[in-house]
Length: 248
Image (cartoon, rainbow, N blue to C red):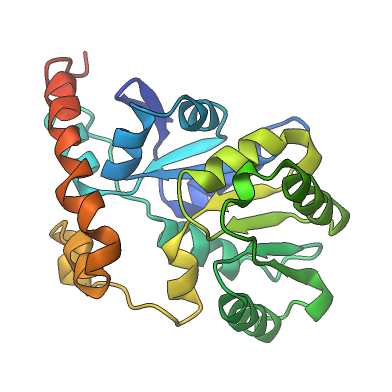
């Protein structure tokens, strides 16, 4: 099942159901799962390549609590939060299944090695886990992009985890298309660093109160100031338009 918000169809259900929906999608292209937050909605209003990646995704979830609240306020009562953390944890818990091959695109080699250790400890063979740390601007480097896509395909990847942030992760996956094969792809950004034990996550109380953004800001104020205190104001206009068009 799905619900519509901002003209986008979001998959309902928990993390396992979202992953099952993505995995069941037929075709030769990667089955991309995207996790919408306020910053994504602003970016979608400005970036055509990002909109294309979202449109082609196999599943889309409501990650940010403000989006869940807005959905419920406008009559989409089936809305629930499914975060990148939830999806990654669910996918990793299922990684013992025969034939699983995981490819991690990481912000640093340390993240990749920590995750490889975790996955091997959970039962995967070392050769079942591949790591890439792309250079800054990789999504605009056609030669590097083709080479990385070829690595992913040759590896026989069944689960591709993009931990290098939005919108570059989603756009790169969409542009590579069939060159990647047909893995399930999780664009989870910072969640990969958290899973590797290299970044903290907000306490549950802050998560449920919709204050996870504040926790993240306090840990990286210079990097996140513009996102949360400049860009996010554009969401107010987008939200007002959505409230004028409640679910029928």
